[in-house]
Image 1: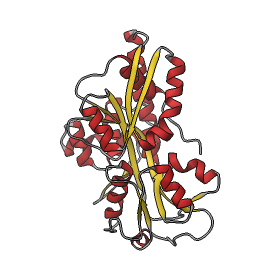
Image 2: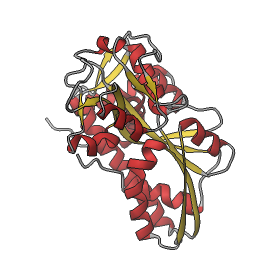
Image 3: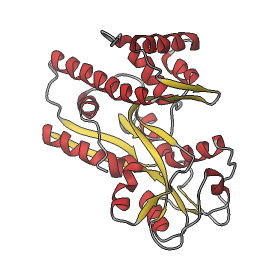
Image 4: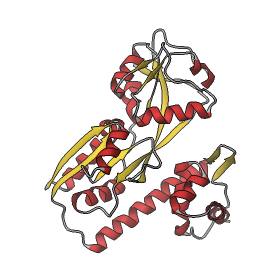
Length: 302
């Protein structure tokens, strides 16, 4: 029997668990107890008649039904934000939109969103500062920009972080020629890895994922440390090692036949791109842009 309705009050809790991968982390973010979060998830699963997560000692993993519901839940949130803006009769934004973004987001995710925003609001001047995740958080915390987009962190001192879009980090090597032989995650302990610089959100996420997989290694003499996604992907295409990069970053290289994802690697690295704001509500062009970006989320083309 199909459910007649879903209680929308349960969706923020569901998304918090989905994005953090842990009931405990979702409880802290929502300022609820863990039993309260668990009860809400079970109530939602009872309403739908399906399991939304697979539980394990390492956390929770969304089922196929959970992944589908996450997409709808984000659309519901975006629609409610759009309704609030419309009913409030928001004025046309003017002035400067100053924002900061970590390198992957600035290069591959934001450009089409900014292009659509500029077409809708031609009176707004755009300024985008680019740095690694730690640099962007510092800009927001210092009040240099009202809003940023980062990867790799669920919490940061003095900055409010809020989920925006999902991402997956993929291990890739050169599509042709001599490449490191990697068949399982444990092989990564002995092959060259191309690392981003310290402070990079991508590097932080990869290091945590390797530790969870039981691979305790930092940079080795055979590795390279390169400050930028495109130089790392170029090095990988030249056969210098295994690169870890966002699906957003690799899609054009894979399509062109320069890089290939490592097949059947038993290592799944998911993360969330997050808004970073200082204390207090956004206003003006920053508020208008965040509302617009929620209504027009980025889409992978490959």
